[in-house]
Length: 86
Length: 154
Image (cartoon, rainbow over all chains, first blue to last red; front, side, top):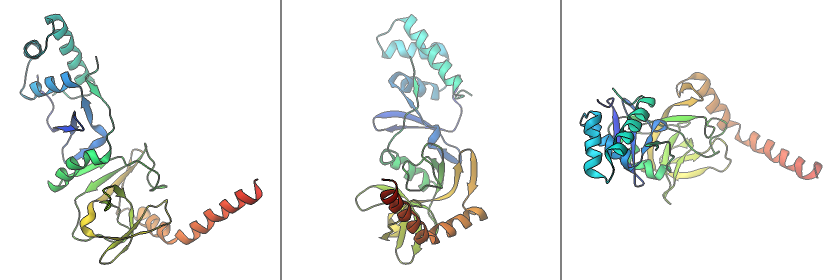
């Protein structure tokens, strides 16, 4: 599972944002990620499967496996809705 | 839980990123705020494409620049000599003595809603010339309307 290419990840005003950036960077398409979202995004940049994301969440945060699985499913769903997945 | 948010940032927060992309030769699409560039740019509806600066800017160019007090401004060049004089299309007081070093980017195209218009579009060029040169007339008109409101519509 991989992200589409051409996104820039940056810290702006203490937030993590992603911006599609090919020949032109479109700031109207900028998305702000929450803390967990930013964490998972960075994992996905390295190409990770859903179970890898769940494992990463369990290692980093104090959550149950069920909560982690739910979060990952929701996160991937939101990425899909925004057409961020390759 | 929502992981992704649409959030607006003040341009000052975005400037390091904008400058970085311009320096890499990239263009940047941005939606300006405010009313000073009406009727061309309507807040919340229209956006501009910033491109890296040429060596010199010309009259009618629309640059993004930084004032000495740090604020970022998108106003039209109405006179270009050694320094530039800029003014918003919806303004009547020119801002003189702007150095080229204060300029950051120049608009090469803009979106009116979903329609992309290049600054080389002849109708846009005509708008620029007519709009800048009709300033005295527009000012007189606006004052006239103000006078009528004050005196007749009491």
